[in-house]
Length: 146
Image (cartoon, rainbow, N blue to C red; front, side):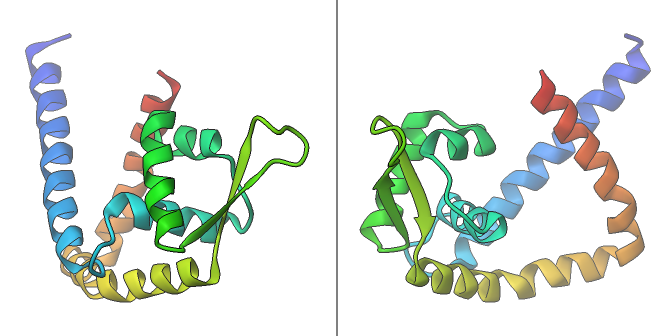
């Protein structure tokens, strides 16, 4: 790896990590009281997929340990945002579905974060965002494969 390539790689990852931290801080401040980013992410995913998922599938999707996902799901279940039931085909597994209250909480969270993310996208410009998305997607896919 050349010095130029190394410097470029370090700069890219430094920008991504800093942007991630800043975005997480801002989102945490505007999410509804008591909702964490991990809670919103799981609820949003369950709305997007439109069906049940096992805790293991969710852990894999979010690249976290099963223990971390179990902790998040326990908090979501306690809040009434998800229903967790036994898998009828395999009693060792459980299945998770979003509840009507979870859908409302997710919708409220979207309403809370929409002004922030729309402002940021507007300031960057739609064309720059469109041009950036494929690069970020390819980076994510490459990192997932490793």
